Image (tube, rainbow, N blue to C red; front, top):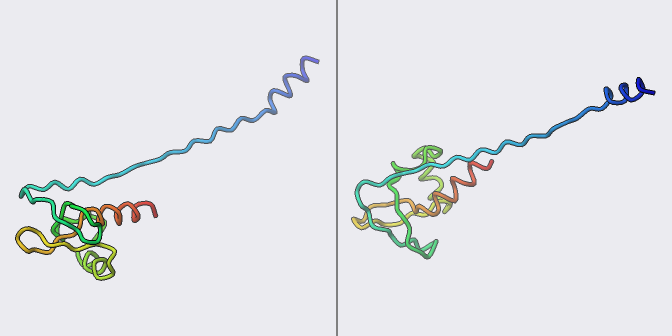
Length: 99
């Protein structure tokens, strides 16, 4: 009887499932002290970024393509320059990273 119990114990297989999640974020720091700008599409004040300051996931030509398709919002800065709406950039970046 003791050998049957030992054989049954040997046949028992245990499986452990492990899930690993990773999170990534990008920080873009502004040095020029740009004031928040109004984004008509978001209907709120946002941080505007120069197209050159965009997230590394977006090459510069893609920034203009996404803006042309209204996937990134363009706003005007204090000095009249074209800026990318920080809220739309964040949303698009989060969607891109989830894929």
